[in-house]
Image (cartoon, rainbow, N blue to C red; front, top):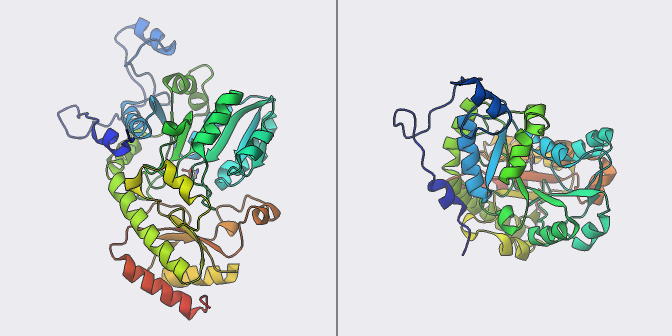
Amino acid sequence: MAFKPANNIQDLQYFGEFGGVNPSISDSSTYTFLSAKTMFDTFEGNADGCYLYSRHSTPSNLYLGEALAAMEGTETANVCASGMGAITPVLMQLCGAGDHVVSSRTIYGGTYAFLKNFTPRFNIETSFVDITKLEVVEAAITSKTKVLYCESVSNPLLEVADISGLAKLAKKYNLKLVVDNTFSPLSISPAELGADIVIHSLTKFINGSSDTVGGVICGTQEFINDLRNVNDGACMLLGSTMDSLRAASILKNLRTLHIRMQQHSKNGLYLAEKFQSLGLKTVYPGLKSHPSHDLFKSMMNPQYGFGGMLTIDVGSLERANALMELMQDRNLGYLAVSLGFYKTLFSAPGSSTSSEIPEDEQAEMGLSDGLIRFSIGLDADIERTYNMMKDCMLELNILS
Ligand SMILES: *Cc1c(COP(=O)(O)O)cnc(C)c1O
């Protein structure tokens, strides 16, 4: 039976304190106890349903976490103040001094910088590999490896991870498979395919209105309890807690995610096919020319499509910059990092979101200077958008 992530969100039911159709927002940092004993039990982690202090958990954060766990099909989830605020405690919880991570080399720039420059301070080393080659991944695993880390669809090169294949490797070597699913919410359900922990930056498609940062960790009750443990839990102790007011607003936006993803995907596929037919080097998982098109198809929940992210290569940074400035002048989108907005956003990853990656490594992984990353918006008339984008390219002699 196919997994139905949007149904799982729809089927949740909770009311506000006075019968409101939205849950009440918990506007408190701390909570009273009727007895001193219950407070003690809560510290020990033995008082279900009691709240202690908002860095630990809040009703509003639990509602949002529950909805995201339902979407990903995991037992539970913990929301965090940002995507990085979700990724870093997961890695710090799973790895200690002397441990090793095998990570995809094409990942979000901040995650790359954390594993490359920050965790070595704690004697945690990372091997960065081509995640699309399972034999290369397996060869990088050592007796010290604890974590396999990847993005289902990678930033910015849109490489697709074979999550079932990686999950088999994780089982074989007793590792945790951690998957950042930020680029493909609803389309891909990594936990269904065997991932142990699924992370999102809520900042992107899930919240979808570019008005906040946020993150989530979806996993087993046991792992989430470990993260929240007052004595040694990385979420509790590192403290990147989401605010309750923000959790409530993200929950409301989550409810339209399925409709938005369908439109992002429809527009993404339309533009990718048109760009490719103009002779532009276009990368989009929905194109047959994408090296992992069949793999994506085999993993996807088909009604949500191939997502809203695509890249084109216009040959040089100068041309990329000129095109992005002209498209912004014509109000076709914004020259901005991030993704998942109602307007199209575009940026040149080599000089922005992936600038943490040294130039020689960028070249090796195929991250070229002329690459433009698009997060395709919710445009009602994508044909008009395409025609106007094509005019920009003709004016700048980008089409030969
Ligand atoms: C943006 C992003 C992150 C980081 O999320 P923040 O909310 O900015 O901290 C992590 N992974 C991916 C794939 C992203 O796109």
